[in-house]
Image 1 (tube, one colour):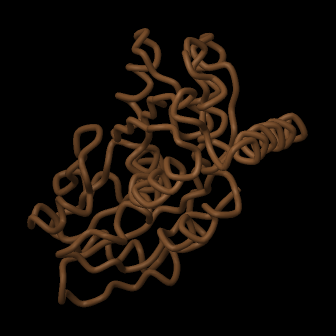
Image 2 (cartoon, one colour):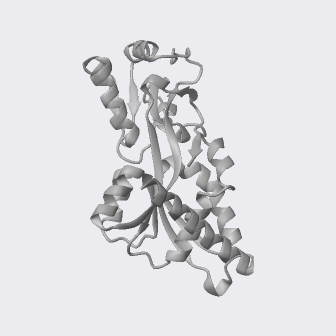
Length: 256
């Protein structure tokens, strides 16, 4: 399976290279609109990368951002889409349903922690410090994305689920944990690192301790009904390429 994924990445990179070498980007006559629906976890780096791709390729990208649950729903409802970027396990589910034809891994993401500005910094060195932090907080915020499943299981594993349930706020799909903390809806919040680094009005406190960390692989899935398959492959090749790597790292993601 891993070899197949690597071959896929090499293929799309080759397609993009041929397209760019043919004329310094797609001609105006051959330019396509690519419909991208992607997780909020990759929104900030893609704000930088998509204009770069559009300039290099001549294609236009119509990008929308949201939570994984909503993206999966839209991808299986027959909506006119070309590419989705969501956790790899959800792309695999879409492949089994026939909604997605191919998967390319793009970035790995860790769970991070955010707090109120100026508050005392909690001990996040290990699981014991995290437990004390959870019990001391007045209000905790988690998302409805992949990080929330891990956090809920972690609370149970740590034996604090009953203690923190009355003060736990789980946001609706697509809503921002960082923005909720900035608005005073919680003292501490947990979500993908990339969703916290650019939020104003919070303190980014760092990742979860390594002994309780969870890494999510975000992958591109090509919709089986795409009307612009070559352009979609060119986009994904760019997002998986060397130019994208430093931008992803800047936003707390690890290129695959």
